[in-house]
Image (cartoon, rainbow over all chains, first blue to last red; front, side, top):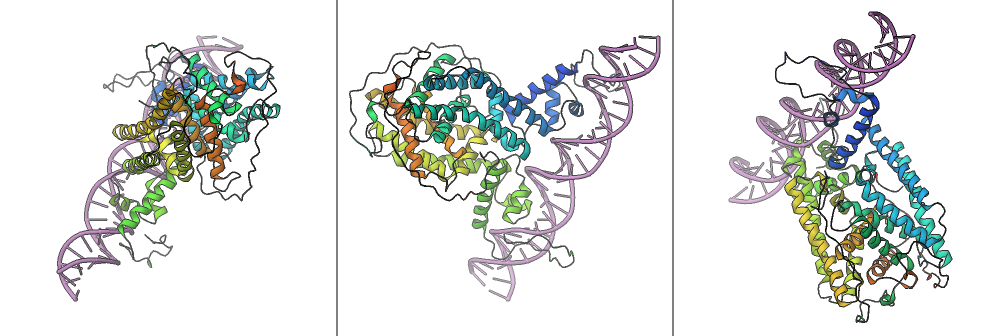
Length: 254
Length: 254
DNA sequence: AGAATAAAGGAACGCTTGATTGTTTCCTTG
DNA sequence: CAAGGAAACAATCAAGCGTTCCTTTATTCT
């Protein structure tokens, strides 16, 4: 664990093995976290096990006490994340029956979850391609179940007449893409708070699900003169906050 | 170019150099296309130059007549794509002044472009992290300019009172994420045609931009009894088509 | 205190990678 | 038809990769 880089003097280096205060469970957790961090930053293929080992303060060979493969490390991270996501979503939705309320709950949950665990989400979305076939099948199945949650909400709402959704599957993909996209640019401590963002995004989702507003009567027509009677934009003061950004992948919109 | 794998008999193999009918420009184009294909399927880091060379029917060393680096190959692909995207978008929007019409045009353009050039788009979105700092800066700048197109449309529409967008920047990210997400699941020849998808997605975008519909009055309230008076879903027959899917990355929702 | 076990070191392996170089062959132009 | 450039081969390099194996040290349990 806490082991310094070998100093220049070769004679002074006592060939150490188990380091003082080392603990299996703690190391395993450290490896997991460092793995998430490095995969997030560099990508799975680009992260070497020597890099990972150095991050934890280990030798690369020692990692194999904690996972079978590099591949299995990725799989464990992604599977655990997907199960956590799915479980927490179901828990949040439990007991709520009204489609509109369920939609808002789902939207808010998804956004908050993605703003809180950006690294995990990012990895789960980007590194699916790096999973071997069997592992990927497991993860895709979990994702399917998650998407079904939203799809069923939309279907139920459309059946009840609350929503105007002609294609629930398409709308599901569209909404999830939109919501997930927040972790491509959101930084904690940014201009807008999590609550404000949840409000904005959920508003967009609900507007999309509940169908055309007043100004959209002739939707498919090519272009017409715009009516100028719409209401003024509602005021919503966004208090500015200090920005403190953490380690980010190169995908950042910096 | 057209060169077979070395046969088993070593003595019979005449040590070939320049192959018959080889042409620089054609090979360059073949390398570019194969590069897009392989990066799309396996990812930039996972694609080896030997793999790429084999795809084109070359020796790996010969590739260096056509690019300086593996890195530069990626950069060329991504930069050219971004410039093409930006240029075509500006061309499509040229002459249109009405914000709503501009929004629809942008949405339709973005969708069609992304449905048509899924591989390029996918690469440009996923492999930005693999670009070196300077290259990434160029690409990010181009992406910024593209995003500004939509942001200005929203801003203008809000100013004119046509749109109800309190946060144009957030709405821009949300909309682009939603639209771009289509290339995560769209397959040509699927159940819905490009035109139908454009209609559905553009409807969602316009609804989101034009603000709350009738059923969304009390938006931020936790949960209330749902009103049952909304209109029935509009009919839209989606003719079923044969599905013919091409080579896809492992990220596919199969 | 001593044995058993847990945790890590450290060296090596086979392999692949991106890249370089010198040579050979084809094509074009005079 | 010969010269020069274009196009590709073929061999090679050092570096880095994931992984294995055995040893060494710390901790825990009788």
